[in-house]
Amino acid sequence: MSKEAYIVLKNISKTFKQMQALKEVDLSLYAGECVGLVGHNGAGKSTLIKLILGLIQPTEGSIQLFNQDFSLKNASELRRQIGYLPETVALHGALTGEETLNFYARLKGVPLEDNLSLLARVGIAQAANRRVGTYSKGMRQRLALAQALLGEPKVLLFDEPTTGLDPASRQMFYDIVGELKAKGTTILLSTHALAELEGYADRIVVMKNGVKLADGTLKTLQSQSGLPERIEVKFKSATNLPSHWEKIGENAYSTQSLGDQKITLLKELGDLDLLASLDIYTPSLDEMYMHMLKREDI
Image 1 (cartoon, rainbow, N blue to C red):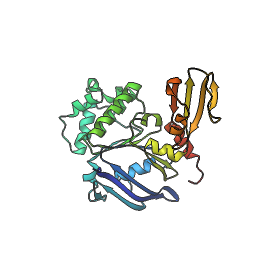
Image 2: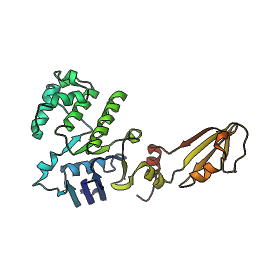
Image 3: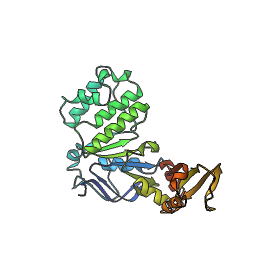
Image 4: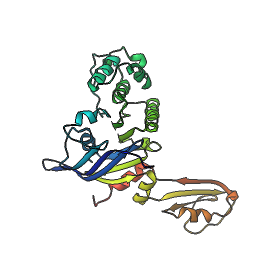
């Protein structure tokens, strides 16, 4: 059964004066998936998020939210189903954490009674009555996350959401992402911390100069990047292998695998009981991303 597309961008272009920020971008975001949005500064990520929020209008193309064309008439209603955590969090220092959340809840038109439990969910319930001006950067980021979760939105847009968070807080954030995905929430996560996306993002969208360069799973991106996997083996005793296996130590060899070569290469090892170790190294998202950015045709 196919999932519902909550966000559909068709042939979106956006020009600011003489600068083209986005060029003919197609993007669909489905219920219950986390999509990582990556790209260099100026790649078009923030413009894409602002278009989904309705803060700016496309120069060309169309945007659908929840099977409705996005327009000024229904913008307010549709925005209530979207939560947003900006990269730069601006919170009033004189308000307490609870007062801050109550303020945003009233703006969004959602009940206040669940706000304390929401603060507990992001790990700052103990500071609910403290002024935000006394919060650390990480605590302010957690409070901003709680604000984004108000009203259980169907779509969440996160822009560098783990900035200022310590490792434990980052794990808490991704635990929440997992819970939200399981409930059917759509998450678009823009970040430069690419290593964090591995294991959490269902798809990765790579932007460069306003163009969608790639869109797919890590496995798909690896195939598109053309980067090989590396296989390293060590035998319990001296063994000879074909010449494309490079000797890297005593009874140890290494080779590279492209596409569907891996099974053929592994068969060349013979009896696996003779192996002391076998390691397969897949290119990291950082490596794939940097390789894609070197393309000269975009």
